[in-house]
Amino acid sequence: MFIGAIILFLFLVFVLYNVFAIIRAIVRWYLGDYINTYLLVARLDPLYKKPIQRYLNYYKQLNPSEKVVFEKRVQKFINQKQFIARDMDKVTDEMKALIAGAAIQLTYGYPSVYFTHFKRILIYPDDYYSNISQRYHKGEVNMGGLIVLSWKNFVDGYIDYKDGRNLGLHEMAHALRLENAVKNEEYGFLDDDILRIWTDLCYREIEKMELGESDFFRAYAATNSQEFFAVSVENFFERPEEFSNWHPKMYNTLSKLLNQDPLKIGRLG
Image 1 (cartoon, rainbow, N blue to C red):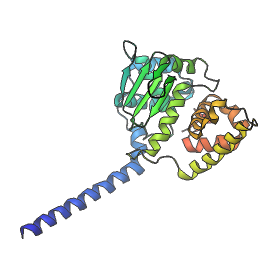
Image 2 (cartoon, one colour):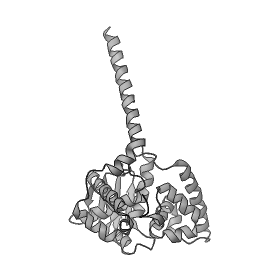
Image 3 (spheres, rainbow, N blue to C red):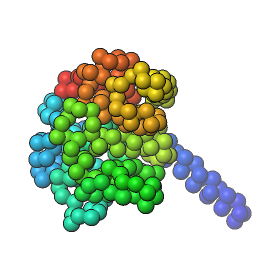
Image 4 (cartoon, rainbow, N blue to C red):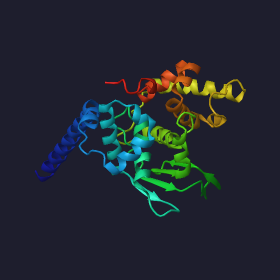
């Protein structure tokens, strides 16, 4: 009798757990984007808004309603992360705002994605030495849930926003691919079919670069598929017209993959 009651209890717990899991999945897939786009409560702190208005060209091109969503998402990103200063006194409000802005720019087409796996963001004043790789870095992203940026190089990416070089977007692109692969509530948001098309285009272009038949991207893009993606993202946002004219299929595939098109920014909704 007692053992039967325990078995029944465990069975009910199992059933309830799976029912709630199904409900969570339904909310995530069907209501997640709506909740994260329209029901974000916290407005952007004015201390963060000023640098975004001043430096983020992407933000400047958004229409008024899109700007409100962008601002709220920046605030949510800031609230979720731990920003850590390295070899400098502190992390400023400007640093938090612009780093969050880079992340939200890249994920603007995915309202539910906030790089959940990455809890900490380390900021160095300039290039920093890695004891692991035994060389200097401008930035890096690792599976341990860490994004590392050198502030000088990050800022340089926004001084000229049309040169196809932006450290913030580059490292966030790496984080995006890892976030898509790490099993958590944000797992698998990139479309597999589009990703396969992108991967095929990527390797074809890397081969052309190695043969000296293509030079639209800087040589570093040919390092591997991950760096090719990151460099492509930089050019996608900073040189969209040139990118689209050079390789329409690759540009359109990346646009579908990121669920946004810089050439149509400000004209959505």
